[in-house]
Image (cartoon, rainbow, N blue to C red; front, side):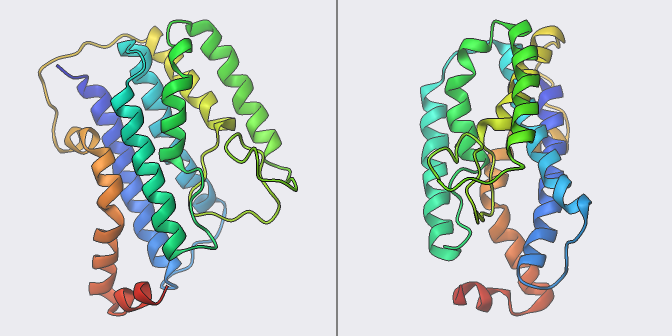
Length: 225
């Protein structure tokens, strides 16, 4: 049995992710311009939704460390780093959202049965993370934590600060708001939620194909990168 409500919420996040990445890819290849605060905050809201939902799921199910899940996320994270290093070496992904989930899947385990600590500690991490990312530092060693180096550029960045705080807050609400698992699968949105990781992995090739159909020169430009 599954929590279709969680699948539905994750499906909404997946749809928003597809919408953003379509516009992002079009912008990356110079077809449109994305400017303003909305395009800064929109992807972070989407990432925050996935992270909060993941924490909520941990709080709801109280499942412990899953080695298979950790290894899967770690392998995907390494692949993303390798592929982006080949195609976009100046902005390759060092610690994106998949890297975050790999590490957070370990760190979240001792917090899963301590909801009060999750809420208090989670809020503190969010506030510290937002504050500290205003600054830049002359070293890369704590990039994963949220200590941003000078001149740092990347296509995807979700460090522990502040994002692990959102996961802890999700765990808190997952413990406090009880929902029932059922055999009901939900509709298309829930289906997307159940397959959000697969969608994340295949979305860019599909989007590039669509952009190729619309503009006619995308594949050529990809090959030139």
